[in-house]
Image (cartoon, rainbow, N blue to C red; front, side, top):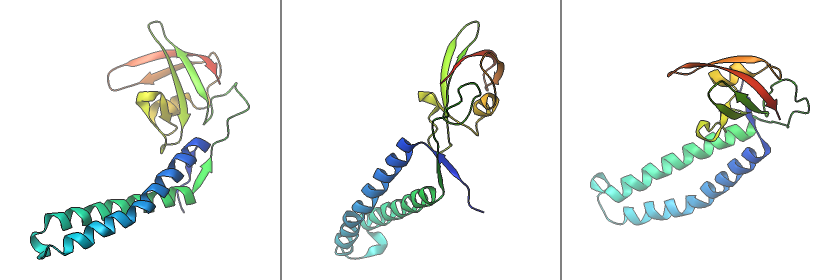
Length: 152
C-alpha cells in the first residue's frame, strides 16, 4: 500500500513547479554529459562524473516528486476550529512564551517557520486537542506546558 502524502494546495503547486523545472533542466544535463564525453577517457573525466551525478540526483528527485503527487491528499482548511486538525494554525501560550504552529504533512514541514508535521511529537501532541486545553510539549531541550489560545 502506498503512503498518502498530506499537502496543502500551495504545497502541491510548489512541487509541480519544481517538477517542471527539473524536467526542463534534463536537456542541460544531457548536453553537459555529451560535452564531457568529447573530452576523452571517461575514467578520469571529472566533468563527466559530475554531470552523471547531477543526472542521478535530478532523476531521483523527479521520481520522488512524481510519487508524492501521485499519492497526494490535499489538505482542505478545516471548517471546525474547535478541534486541532491537519491544516489548522494553533496559537499556544505558556507562562514564559507564546508560539504559533501550522500543522501540515511531513513533506511541507518547516519547523523554523512554524510549519510542523502531523507526524512530529509536537504535531501529535496538538492533534485532537480543543481550545483552552493544556498541552505538554517535549523537546530535546525541555518540556513546556502550553494552553491552546486559538485554533484557526
